[in-house]
Image (cartoon, rainbow, N blue to C red; front, side, top):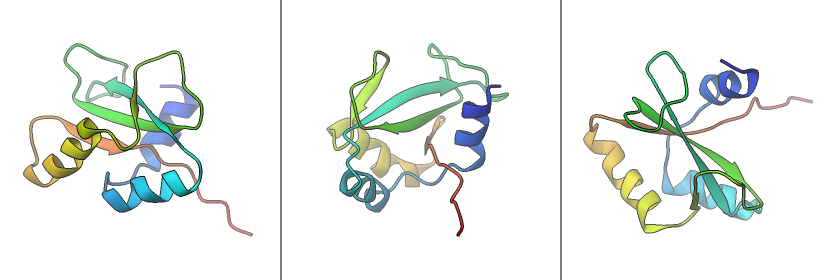
Length: 96
């Protein structure tokens, strides 16, 4: 597991409409979709969970517009606890 993946997982937060709105206010436009196995290895065919990594510019990878219908469906489905979890990647909060 790379440090970036480790930090995204350690500091992940729930995917909510409020979290998406906060990211939009900070200038984020896209969510990079990353799939992982239960032991945190990249997997896109049958992932155990998805990590959505906010990005400001369009990456050259799998992405989803931050306020797309699909992201809104994932938010709505989060309460149903389906077979695959979807998290929003986080970063360590810097303290002064």
